[in-house]
Amino acid sequence: MTQALRHDAMRARNLALVLGAVGARGSVTRAALAEMTGLTKTTVSKLVGDLIEGGLVVETGAVRDGERGRPGVEIRISGQHVAALGLEINVDYLAVCVVDLARTVRLRRTQAVDNRSAPPVDVIARLGDLAAAVVDEAVEKGLRVVAGVLAVPGPVDMTSGVVHNAPNLGWRDVPLASLLRFPFPVRVENEANLAALGELWFGSGLPDFLHVSGEIGIGAGLVVRGRLFRGAHGFAGELGHVVVSPDGPPCRCGGRGCLEQYAGQDALLTAARTTAAARSAATGRLAADAPPARTSGNAPAGASGNAPAGPPHKAADAARPSHSPGMLLPAQQGVSWMLSRLREGDENARAACERAAWALGVALSSAVNLVDPDAIVLGGIYAPLFPWIGDMVADTLKARLGQMRGAVPPVVVSRLGAEAAALGAAGQVIEQVMADPAAHLHG
Image (tube, one colour):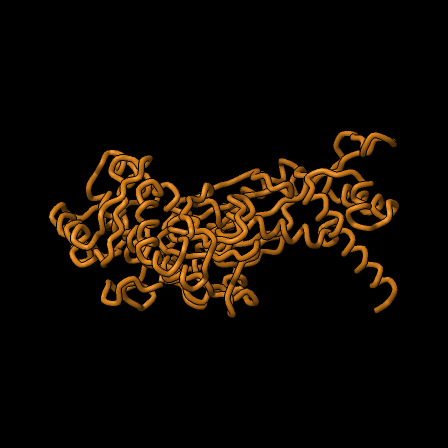
């Protein structure tokens, strides 16, 4: 390696060291940076100058570093120039957000659209149009979008950007990365993993948790000591295809009795629309198998604390319509319709939530036994539905795990909801800039 290359590598490393220190402290003087990093004051001043010129940091007001000496000028991360693009393709919507380097969401757009079995080229074209409009608006605000990450609901080969199998989209072995046409780099990543990272960086900030993304599909992302666990091949977290009941209904993945068939968005909405007779039969099965009820003091009317020990699926499965789009409520109305029914005390909606919460608790009890998370965070559609499902999920976990463990992981709600994946996608870009600011100082 030549001396010039060694110098460039050392400068890149020191830039990352200084930027990381600024990010960790929020705001800090040059003198404090020299003390924190072990670099000389001269070196720190030069590096800070480069970061200011590149729009990554900005000077704020003067402060005094102690009782003696001249005041110093504080440095903080700048949110006025560099920004990241977060994108998401889901079954029934497209989402785009722009987040600046200070982690402030500057723009967000969501478009309701049915992507089931749509050709990937068409979906990408629609997403590209939506993203282009958002990026143009970001430019008008003085922001420079340096890179993006795209969240998709299926396992992704991180090297090639191939989506191996997204059953709810009807995609298999789609080379999605090669279809993207953006004026900056865009990577493809699994939606559930990015939702977990969104929760880590923009939500609760818990260092160890299992995040569950409830949409039409159900995914999970595991964060351990502040880092995402991907598994040996990057495919960890397919919670939606954990088997709840081996003789249950067929799933798009090719199996039977998967969690998605009980607790996915389609399953919830169709179960809530079953006839009163079918609901009565299903809830009769629930009542027969359930232990004594525990009612939460702050649960809304219609919420339940029952934790059934057996699968309440037989009667409801027989009455449940198929997954044809004509039988489902429009994507933009589905969850809000469900919430309105729950608030009005609708028995079908309440029974559908009980059934989904029981199944989710069963699947999560297996996950807890395997990975031992500190907490379980429910996101996606489970966030607004949490008052009607949270108690039963927790009770089912306790009933199934109580004899094995001194304490069961708490079940909490994500405040990010359906925005978690797009935020996690943008957050990945921000992390990349912070780790290698030298790559973004020019351009």
